[in-house]
Image (cartoon, rainbow, N blue to C red; front, side, top):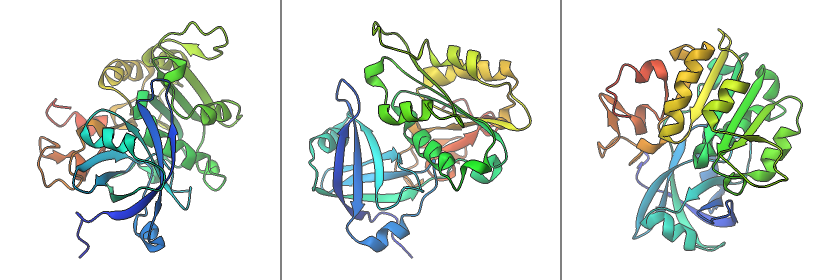
Length: 281
């Protein structure tokens, strides 16, 4: 039996600062042992524990996509002891990754359906993984219309800016980028909060349309009623409770909502599933 607490050794191959305030960096890791990459086979929506020997570990959603080979990426917000140390590390440094962990977005169910991705702030990481997965030439034909609504506080706080513009230029993806506000005269996308843009741009809910929502709690709180108004049923609203992830395997008991352990049974749930749990999320 594989010990779930033992991380795979990885080398930091590339570090990219994503936002103007330098609070978010994307780390590209390469496995020291090539066979570990095969063991770390993951699906879009899963997460992993990033381990710093002698310091600790932190659960982070996987930002790279399963169709991107030879590396794995994570976008990390500098907010605590482990993440602050990570932000001080350099390309070439060695650390560990434990996983993949948790469940994933229900890709088999979503095949043949319209998919609406709704994200905000730095919670866009697993959504990037999902978009890259769906747009892969081998996969795009498996899905009908794809809409993406993504927002941040300002243009300088958007993640993956080059990819956002590439996606906006595609004719097989309906891309809606928004910011809360900006005085940039060159800004050519939406201005407004994610729930407002969702109401304006998202397609109506149908039997063949699913919404995947991941973002800060306040965004989710005000987006959910919009989806209700658009006709999305609770079993067609899929959410990721990434802010509740802890040890990754449900052993520490700090991720539970009622009988559900977010690390083990989630982090991906339908709203219908969440409505059957205590309102602790």
